[in-house]
Length: 102
Image 1: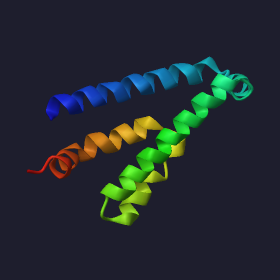
Image 2: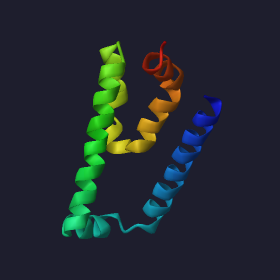
Image 3: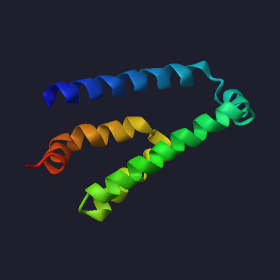
């Protein structure tokens, strides 16, 4: 469990670093225009936001406290999978216990 948390945390850090590098480039609007004007860019965005929706649904179904669920779900469209990874890392022991209880 600890190793998986470390791997997921490392993935989150790499993602944060890549986002930081992309933001430092300063071409966000330019790339956004390109992305939304090409079919594969649109596919990528639909795929990304479908994943966000799936993560939000999973959090909603898993969290018993719906206020807490909303607090975890609300930032997903802005913070993306870094936030989803944070939730998974935080809840991993509970996820494991509920998914694999014998």
